[in-house]
Length: 292
Length: 234
Image: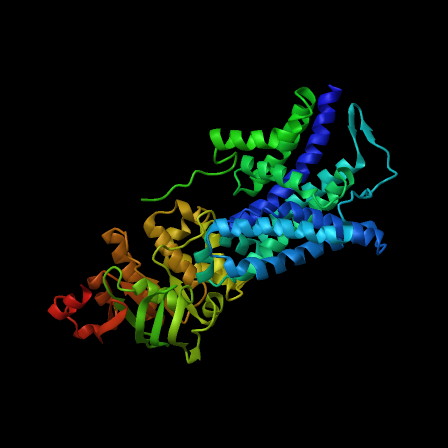
């Protein structure tokens, strides 16, 4: 019983990270119909900014992480405005290729000061021992990850349901023309969505870095897992991204233990292929219907 | 009052509107009639800033609006009920109406008052407050789209083919609603293919063909059976 519990705890922690990555992908996709292939690098940039503020400027841990998240939010806002708005109505392949370019650009930018070295990202509670509850053993970092992801999910739910900006984002996601003609500033919504997605990516980055280590190529793995989570969840569903992420984390851990650790490397590909073949609309996606 | 002069608009290299001019005086219902592909919907979208405008001026209550983005145009007092209704299908009737009032910054009691006025005008929506917009019938969706536009308290309401795809009984209901709105002082620009319906509510009529205004007249002077009028409509 101990091993399944252990696998579940760490699977949920990893899954929470994948869910956050998937959330960023889904938000941008729902609003602008573009898969943001540079999202893994946003996570990496967020982690490097947090690391720099912590180590070089000596900011307190929470302040450094918060500043990193804010910085990535601003980066997302600016990126959308200068790189994507001018081509917002181009073919989606064009947009996707620009995001691929963004991925390479961000990796290149990170390599200028940091090279290709691997850095150790400090933990929030480095001296707190592993927590043991009966047969359940959880590291403080895992608890922080799950707690932050949970709080963020609840916060986003409230944001989308109760705030004016959140409702405008939902409206724009559902009908861009409709949003324009009722007076929603859709340009601001585009930028705001990118800001939100990148800020969430940065949260994932600073939470992942203590375990995943910090290096310019760290984003690729998270992008793949997040992509698989989004596909499993239905790609247009925010709850789907959360559930998909948690499931991917659990599948990864259990398959890695009971089948082979090598399976963890390919599990995301297997899940993407399986879902696209068997269940193309994912767990929470809807088959599009048209009134005739 | 809405005044349009020499408006040219289209999609990329395709010019659909070839310099149309029309006026919608305060408190009046003006109809823009034309057959399929004449440029009616493009005219509506160009006025709202959704379609690229190449030339011409658009003045709303004396203010130039042709260079403004759609959200700024709505804030100045124009509201469009589009042909495809363009509702937010996953949101409830109440949420759709709330968003309609957003541009005016309506909140709290003011928002509730305006929403109740819409429900009073459209009792069927009142019965379906918590239904998703996507689950409503065609007639109900048209009412919701109209109610949503009214929530922005427009000085000019643009109705783009409101009767398309609706049963005759619903069309009659819409005619009654348009008349009631106009009697309440609402200025309306109505785009229609349904000539009989348009003539029954309009004060003044323009006919558009091939992206140009080819005929205009007071509605009362027009006979729906007039040969030239019919010819212009194609």
